[in-house]
Image 1 (cartoon, one colour):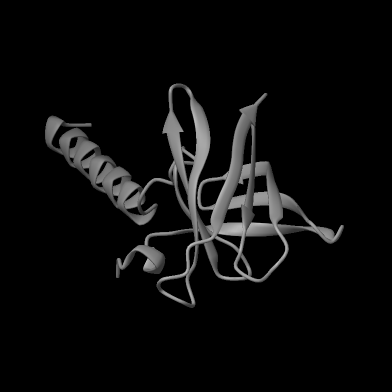
Image 2 (tube, helix red, strand yellow):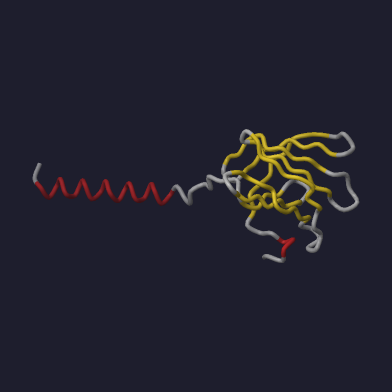
Length: 132
């Protein structure tokens, strides 16, 4: 095979690799830090501080000025647990179960003894702070 054919094959290979890489889209975030929205439209802000994750605020996104009261946040053995109290509703404790880029699976319990599981989704929009 002559040098022009080899060069042509190499160029086609590079173009194909670039096309595949571009079609994969943006990389999935590898951190739990960010804003997470639950099924009831509460958004929790999680930050990475001093080698561990911490819940720092929670807001109810339907009412732009409604901040939930964050009672506690702890991080042990890779599990983040936080408790917040929405206005006029029972306090809720969330505990992370698994994290997969843009989804965060949690278990929850409330002050009435109810419990369950849900998936929080990463969100860019944090209406509770006036962002749009």
